[in-house]
Image (cartoon, rainbow, N blue to C red; front, side, top):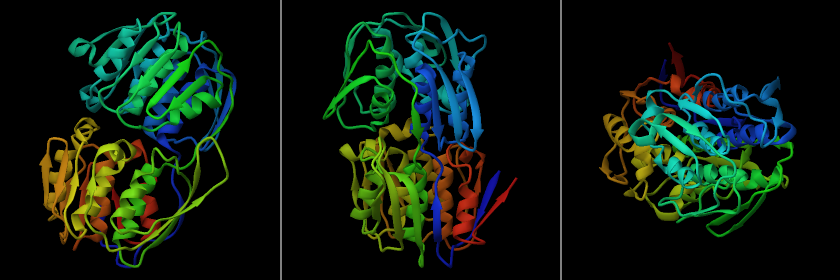
Length: 436
C-alpha cells in the first residue's frame, strides 16, 4: 500500500479524536488477563500491535469478548490461572507485546515460545531477558536468548530484585514489575531518567501495591489483582503527527479531544512550545490517566535541542519532530536517542535517507540527528522501511512539500493508527490518496 500526498494548500482544519493509547491498551489487556474477575476496557486500540496482545492472552486461556468498537470484556483468571499455550505466541511487529508478555511468563512454571515478524526478530530482547533471568526465569533462544524466537520457562516464586537498567525504558521497567507479581519479596526498578509510568498507574488501579519516588519504583507482591473498568484515552503519539502537521501547514487549526496528557508522555508538547508553536491544553476530568483537549495551529518554528531526560518522554514522536526541524529556522540537534536505531527500523538512518530525498539536510549521529533547518521540501518517492512512524512522518512532510510525494510501504501504519490517512484526508480534503 502507498500514500500519494499533495500540498495541503487550504490548511488542516477540524475537530477529531485519535485512536486509543497503544501503551495503555497493551497494559489493560495484560493486567485484565491476570486479575481476578472481569475487566471492562473501553477505547482499546484496535490496531495490529494491540490485537496481538489480545490474541496472546486468549492463547493463554483467557476469555475475551468484544462488545463493540474498542470495547472488550476480559475474564481475568488471576495470578495462577494462565494455561500453557498449545502453540507459539506470535507477537507480530509488537515489541511491547513481546517484552511485557515475557515479564508475565516469567511467573508461569511452563514453557512458552514467542516469535514475531522479521522486524521484531531483529530487535533486542536482552534488556528484558537479563533481569528476568536474575529473578530465576529460564530464557533460551537465538543469539543466546537475546533475539526472538525465544522460549521462556518461569518459576514461582521468583527472586526479589533491585534492577538498575542502563537506559530508561518503560518496557523493561514494566516487564520487571509484572514479573514481580510472582516474586518472593519486593521488586525495585531504579531508572537513570523518568520513563512513561502507565504500568505503575494501572497496577495500582488493579490493586497492586506500587510506590514511586522520583526514578525509583517498588512493587510489593502478595496481593491479588482485581478486575476493574479501564477507559483508554487517545494516544498522544498518534496525535503528534496531526499536531505537527497543523503547526507546519498555513491556515491550520485543529482540536484533538480526549487525548492522553500523562506528564511522562507530553515531551512532544514541551518541544513544540520550545520551537515556537502554541499548543493550548485543556485538562479533562480527573482520572487514573490524565487526558484532555489539545488545540494547535500554524506557527513559525525555530530549531532547538532535544536531549537528556526529554528523550524517554517523546521517543516515538521524534520522527515527526524531525520533519518539523527540517523546515524550522535554525539548527536542531537530537541527542541521547540511540534507541531510535532499534525500533521497527533504524529510524535515524531511515529519516536521514528519506527526508534527504525531499531536500532536508540531516546528518546522522550515533545517538541522533543534526538537522540544519530551513529546507524547502520537494515531493519525492520515499519509503517507510516498514516503520509506521516513519511512514506517517513522511506523509506529514508531503503536506508541505512542493509537488506530489509518494510514500511507499504504508500498510505498516495499521500498527498504531489505522485511520491515519482517512483522518488527514478529512482535515485536508484532497491532500491524501490511498493506493493498493
